[in-house]
Structure formats: C-alpha cells, structure tokens
Amino acid sequence: MGLALFILLVILIAVFGFWDTLAAILGATVMVVLAVLVGIGFLVVLGMLVLGRTRGGP
Image 1 (cartoon, one colour):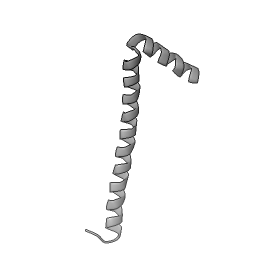
Image 2 (cartoon, rainbow, N blue to C red):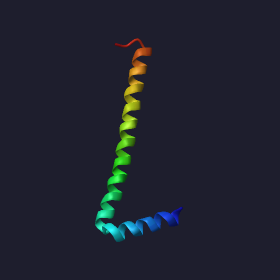
Image 3 (spheres, rainbow, N blue to C red):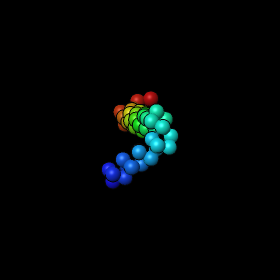
C-alpha cells in the first residue's frame, strides 16, 4: 500500500508539478482537519443540548 501511494505521489508530481501537488495535499489535509473540528463542535453542541434538557434547563 505504501508503494502504491508513493508511485501515485510521483505521478502527481510529474503531471502537475511539485508546488501544485504540495498545495493539493495540504489542502486535502486541512479539509479533513476542518471536517473533524466541525464534527467535534457538533457533538459538543448536541451534548450541551442533551444535558440542558436532562437537568431541567431552558
């Protein structure tokens, strides 16, 4: 699996150039991190709403 990813990376660099490939990889990584943060935020808000209802809050 690692060899396949390395070959894919080499092909991407050969086709698009180093900086475009680096920008694409960094952009994809940031999108994954952002999706995880949004998911965590959603769970926190959901947890606050559930706890507020079980404790007799507003």
